[in-house]
Length: 227
Image 1 (tube, one colour):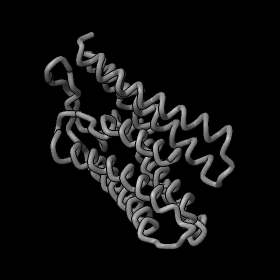
Image 2: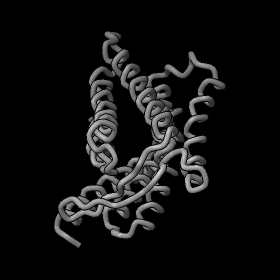
Image 3: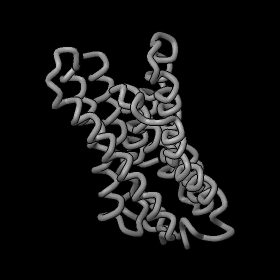
Image 4: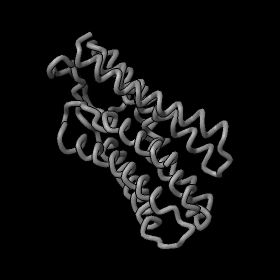
């Protein structure tokens, strides 16, 4: 394994460990109403990061495609879970019907099944290949129509999350933890920057900027919780 691969793998593994720390801490100590979705979110992020570690350390196309598929077991649900945690943490969820919350997971469920069965219909990715960059063998993909639906949904969820935290941050009530909302706002902006980089910069080369940014986002959230 090259030095660059080792360094990047260590960095992503650090993000995975932080994610598991979140899960253990909140599940054992916290009694808030966002405890369960936050736990599920951390597990989804952990699976997503682990699968990406396996992708960057593989040179075989079949293995890379397999781990990309594993990524979407977690990645499909991360945007909706991120939004639900924000709704529950800010108590905005009490003004939204439970059926509306359930609807948030319709697109993630469809994305999960479409990616799982992509080899039969190619709605998500139309073709795969490999490219080389420095010491890495990268997955080269051609995006299908559902990829764009999923990325649009991801952007929508992240923008709504940013709006929720921004609204609370601007709230001047004494009971409102303004500093924490500012930190959570920053942590939510980071992933959407990664999404735009994936969509606009990497084009057909599968460089997952969201996975590269996610550890920084988790560290920011950790700082906000213990600040």
